[in-house]
Figure 1 (tube, rainbow, N blue to C red):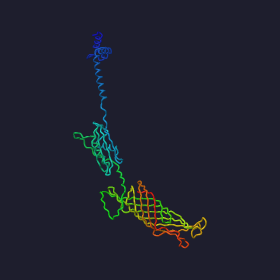
Figure 2 (figure 1 turned 180 degrees about the horizontal axis):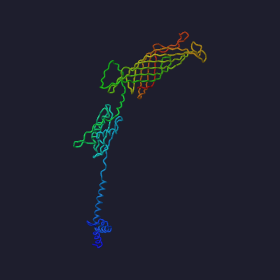
Figure 3 (figure 1 turned 30 degrees about the horizontal axis):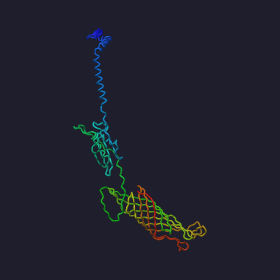
Figure 4 (figure 1 turned 120 degrees about the vertical axis):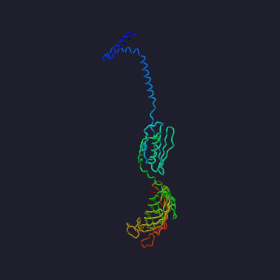
Length: 411
């Protein structure tokens, strides 16, 4: 051994405290330096191997951390439902209330839940399918009158799929059933269109399914413009009609509707003034008329064509005024010397008529139509010279003809 090393070792040995030695001597700096000079040369290989081994295990631990499996994904929910149904958040709350948790990662392949709700004539129909990795389960389907009921059932199935039962029976007390999902009452479906035809038999029997009968009315309001022939010789009086009609229906639970009775109609007409000449006399005629009628319909469709054949009774007033040519470029009232006054007369009349009407419902509340009518007057309308009452100025025809076109609304 090297003498320097040996001396250092002896110095160290002497510097180490004995059992009864003063501990203060152990903190001697010179002795500690000698110890380091001895230990480092003699154990260099030992410590080099020791640190190399520590580095190997540290590298293995770091490699293991980088190879740790990624965090597992939480299940996914695809949710489709009508607007009146509970929304996605309410469905998730219902599943959570039954023990299901979409936020907790699953241990197996990624789960995907697909919920689809549809409105049907008899209520709501819902389906649930679960995809586990590449495998997809058969759809679970349920139907109920309300959307809340079908979603309650699917919430139970979803919670079971998220938490499959364990092999051994659980000692956990059962969770009380949560309250049903609050939902808005389902919207009333739109009423079916009214279709039917007048039955000419005294009796009619039809079979309908069980349910509620609905009594409906279709009301039409139309404005029509055209002309009437026959009130004045060789002249057509402009005519403006405003008519109201009502058709009554009974609708069965299956949506089939039946026209009951006849279609009632009310008409108000304005006959515009029309002027013409008879020799040296100028005559102006105009009037008003009101009529009521009952109509039969071979085809009535509130969304399409409406055909009516109507019988009508009407009354009216016809006003007449006349002037006579007595000077150049001047007309004077017949039998009156004042040029500012007219010879006026008014006559009442009655008429019986038949009409054919056709209208088409272009939109939900708009229709266009045409009417052709023939009337017979109870007596002719005449006008005579006031001097002796025997000279007839004009007289109407016994038969009147009318044609008008128009548009209107129905509801």
